[in-house]
Image (tube, rainbow, N blue to C red; front, side, top):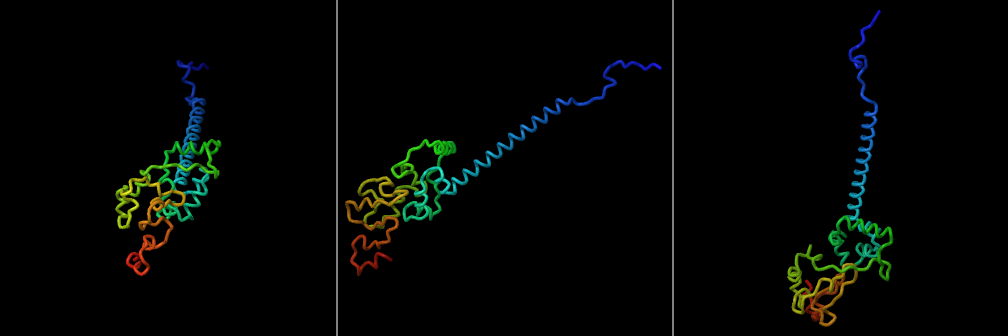
Length: 210
């Protein structure tokens, strides 16, 4: 018997999606997921590093060659330890943009940095604006010590920068007493009664040291 020849050759073919398209979409999906995983991993790693640099001074010392500064922050009687007791962290004063932190890490890995005679990073100078982020203003600080016989934060002897006396990671400098009798100010760590500092007779010191 004779069979009718189909008018359209495609009438006898079954519709199947091309295998090549399936494979292309599979490759695209795998690549997209791989890129997404890498991006998420990079973001998580960056967030972890930023969190550590925000909250862990020892993490800062791992790249910045300044372990003695961190030890002083935790254990000394200096200004940095007073800030530690108040909950002030490294980046509250040493806050840099992310690209600067990355650059510092790269410099550490490649050895592209300068050390001082003690083998650590050189001390940096900061302006008073670093201090007044928390201490409000120089005028406000002067008001907090205006009960002293000579106000070390006043302007009677001129206007000085904070770091004239206050060293972030080291012993404080009693600058006024280099020339003048002590007016009652005490440097951090000094427990000498104020009455003794300003020469009050012993039998009258009780009035000043309460």
